[in-house]
Length: 248
Image 1 (spheres, rainbow, N blue to C red):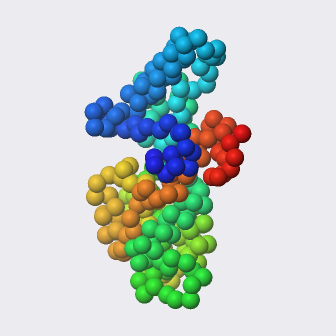
Image 2: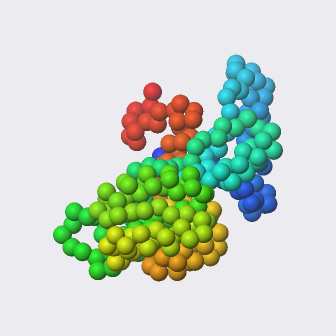
Image 3: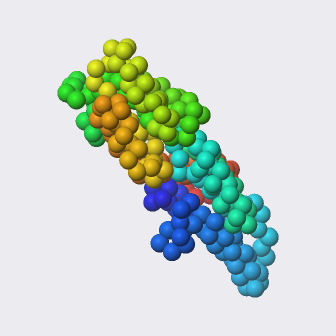
């Protein structure tokens, strides 16, 4: 959220939780209702002040799923929340596949000592992996989409990367076996996930199944915030000005 706001000053952004309680964790439906009410309030205030203003057009809010890849179950819940809110809201696509997510995966692996920070540097990391299991959730469609980002990650690391489904029984173990069968001896598990959508214990179980160390999920990596903003601006047809550019 902070990253998106810093990229587009003046951006009004709020977090809506699918499992919220409208107190500490505001629900998505509640956030959307507030956004719609605020737009009406501003319109009425402007009219009362004697200003000539057009009636609000377009969506009251743009909903950007904080998901690296497709997940039909979660997207269905998001659509239900939008419908329950009664607000006009536009739902964007998920954040990936995207080269920035391949960069984020590379950084998380390097932070865990499982990859070099820069393959052009003339040194090696003793624990660097020579095969990556790219783990995601969301079914077969999510695995296929992760595979696209996986190819970008493979190009960065110059090692094989194969996507697997954390929520598909035997998928992670099968991919680990495939990598070892093709000559990889030091594997690493790279979560292709933001983090909150991951069920507790699922990642630890996958690491045991693959018998290899695991990097941290993508989390609040800067590229995630930039992709959230990109989805928002694309939905509204906004072209962000480069920082330091004159305002027109």
